[in-house]
Image (cartoon, rainbow, N blue to C red; front, top):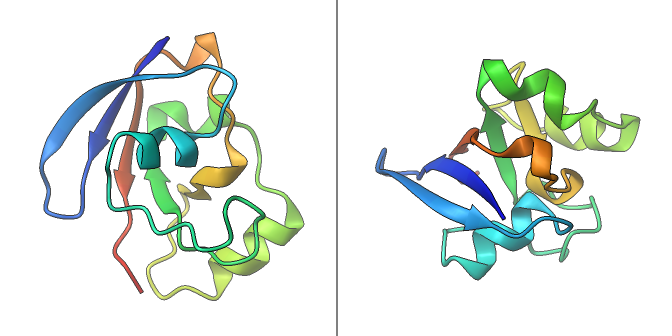
Length: 104
């Protein structure tokens, strides 16, 4: 398990024990966070948009071209924007800090 620090859309902070080997999106959904993820993790809808804390951006990997294209369609895209379905939780991500992006 890896600890994940989350700020929800209401600005409330919490921490969960994230399961290693599955996506950040799956961990958020399993812990009842407001994560639509309409496409089920297929990188085709951008409804699992999150912001990664600056200290963690490099450790979560780089965005694929497909992920970047989807994010660029969003008004609230930031440099730290990611689709949570595209980040697989690893042991090295213990302490990952993120904010769930506004719903568009």
